[in-house]
Image (cartoon, rainbow, N blue to C red; front, side, top):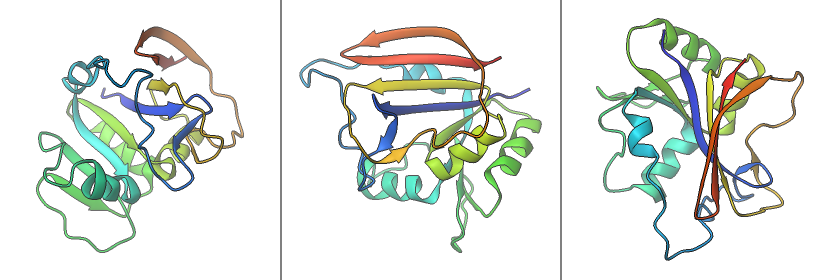
Length: 176
């Protein structure tokens, strides 16, 4: 069965974006150092990416305005907007949990939950994320968009591995 994987960066104090929604702080401690490419290995086992409208818009507007970076994946963008889908980018009005369960039951590779908090937090509440790849960036924002939000119930995880490079710590956990 396909796995639902959260692959995301956060500040040391748990934010995925600053209070203005910006991610321009996503960098290692030394701007001159090359960051390790864990993405290329990760993406080999992924064929589907799920995100919310704000993440989609930020990718289109700021992060990769010239070219859709996930052209080799099927992208699902959860939104209330009326936007025409293409073959590779599907705009859906589904609940994130219902979409995740449906995708998990269909054939294919693993499913990447890309962001934002409106997609991630419902999946957390229902404990639907199988694997967590969290990159802790050496920055303390003090305020912003929280990755985990307030928790009603504890989620038990098992550490799979850690790796550090250029001040960024990669933590990989699996659901117990």
